[in-house]
Length: 100
Image 1 (cartoon, rainbow, N blue to C red):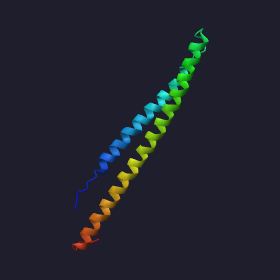
Image 2 (cartoon, one colour; image 1 turned 30 degrees about the horizontal axis):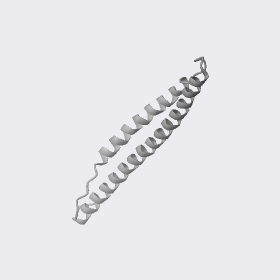
Image 3 (cartoon, helix red, strand yellow; image 1 turned 90 degrees about the horizontal axis):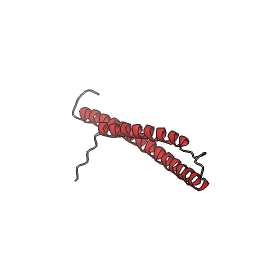
Image 4 (cartoon, rainbow, N blue to C red; image 1 turned 30 degrees about the vertical axis):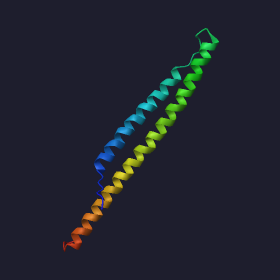
């Protein structure tokens, strides 16, 4: 039988780190609004910059959303592992003749 170990606190820590990454992606996403070329004086360059900004904004939004999803999933997994650990410990304690 193989060994399986999960550090619920580490899952939670990684989830919090991903929350910070998501916040930074949100900040960057907002800054893309400032990257619009209205007065560069050259329509092809302005169009290219605006096209880049639109694609960059789309990509940042996708990364932000996916990072948030993973962060929430890790936090939920951490809580679930902690619950299972507590229930298992209580069951073992009861089976060994300890009070409930």
